[in-house]
Amino acid sequence: MKEFPTSNSRRHRAAARRVAMMVTDRLRREGARAVVLLGSFARGKPHAHSDIDLVVIGRGGHTFERRDGFLVSIARGQAREELEDFRSPVAVGKVIPGWREAELLWDPHGIARRIQLRAKRWRWRRIAPAAARRVASDLTHRSENVHKMVGCFNAGDLTSAAIQQAVLAIFLPAAMAIHLRLLYRSENRLWNEVSRRMGPGWRRHQRRALGLGGEPLPVRCRSTLMLYRLAATRAWRALNATQREMVSAARAIKMEGWRDPTP
Image (tube, rainbow, N blue to C red; front, top):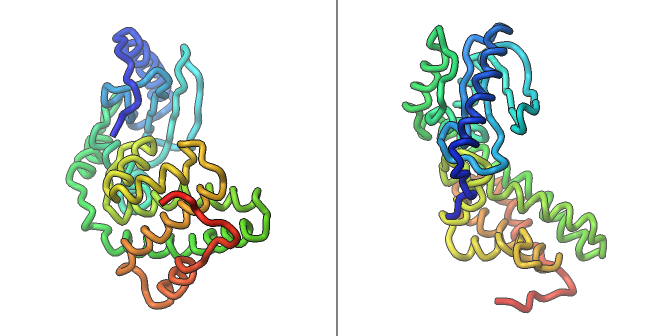
């Protein structure tokens, strides 16, 4: 799997660190209880357009600012809110590796250190039932998008079909990431990592669904339908009887008046 090209400039990384420390100093004066650097700069593998990701233990919301050419993302929240993400099947794929690799910039009370230790001890088995329920719920919910995509395509409403196709192409890999119990650090890695784990059939249809080869809408819709079928087959055991009925109906739906010329 290819990574983003990293910045080989020590000057670039040093400038980013100066910005991070300058913002941290301001946040400290404003009452932050801890400030943590996450993301590619914490890992030492930024690319030219990487932002500086800061997590602040304290009150507030998520804000952005520009400093010396860098986009700085500042996510504020209480320690209990960070730990709540450790119980969320949707959040853990990014949050757990982020905290494991985090650099603690300001942590006088050891709050961030304790959260980081919890992240290092965390295992998928702690939320396995919740993860299975989430995957089943996602696939059942996305069955509606499948019906809308194919129904709109068959009716000639290509705009609506394209919107539903894009929704499925984005969210089906996210559901599979939970099913596969992936820790992927960043959304930039999610689709490639799911593709690697799901195998060549998934990889081929994901490329077509995303239009990476300039595929027309009919091909993208057809491959998106195949992705849904592959996802449903892989996660079938997680579904209850009612969910299986809905997912089966979506798996069986066909695109009318068009045949995929490719194998």
